[in-house]
Image 1 (cartoon, rainbow, N blue to C red):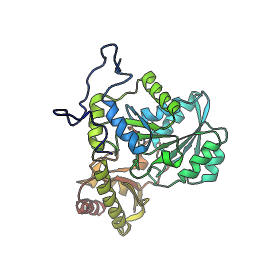
Image 2 (cartoon, protein in one colour):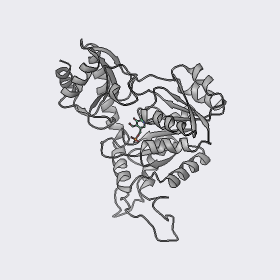
Image 3 (cartoon, protein in one colour):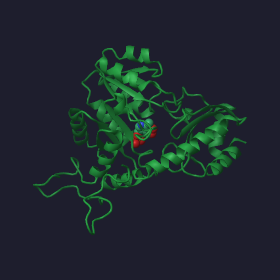
Image 4 (spheres, rainbow, N blue to C red):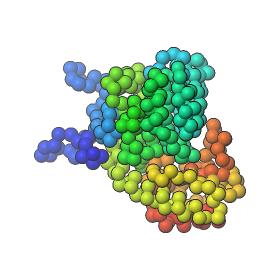
Length: 341
Ligand SMILES: Cc1ncc(COP(=O)(O)O)c(C=O)c1O
């Protein structure tokens, strides 16, 4: 699907890829009117992501724009149940909206299914993220989705870490999925973009309305680049996942590593180094091949001591989140060994 879908009509001389359409407005009378409401470049990307996740995809300017569109669809004063280990931006957004009475946030431990469902009583939205960031804890998504819906909450899930190739939340009962397409979907650290996927037509229309009303649209060049990256997602993911599993195994045996967190799938490995924050900072400053950077999901392996990020001070101080890319596993290991030394 990643390779075959999202192509234009095939014919002699037709372009291999749908070219980016750099137009803010369109001649009246056709399918497209104005660039904030629709651009033909969005269609192939939405077709591929929609097919992979099993729903209808709606592109956004960033992952956070997609998250905002879901939250903005809630009525005034609605209660949002979200994991205390949710992506910092999601937590900050809910906290910011709460200061103005727009929504109320209830933080939960998503690994405690009963407590999370108890918190869903009277809530309008249950927000899921599994594996969590950066502790990589796993939640019982099916039970939470079923229980959340039974209590009247809309169930949404951030699937950025897994991608639809490893986890398809819509098939597990989740109603709307979001991605930071900035990460694994586009995969080359050159685009900021987001996408939301749902099956229910009313929900899809609501997401499209939020996009037009709030203006959180991706540019055609970004969308074109994101689709180019998406074409290779299956092979990138396979390689990065195999490398992540091997690095997690080797780190387990390293004397300077206190704890390794790897859920057994996907491309993020978190590890706590002996010596806490100063030691972890030193590792991040000493890596040569690996890049000290805050993002994840690119072809480059990146590390960050997450506890130094604003809002993440509660994390183990020596925890390093490593997003594994496509370099050779032995080159990455050699770099980690010299930095840990
Ligand atoms: C899990 C997760 N969700 C959402 C986002 C937000 O996406 P974006 O930076 O594209 O707005 C991020 C960004 O780091 C993320 O890691």
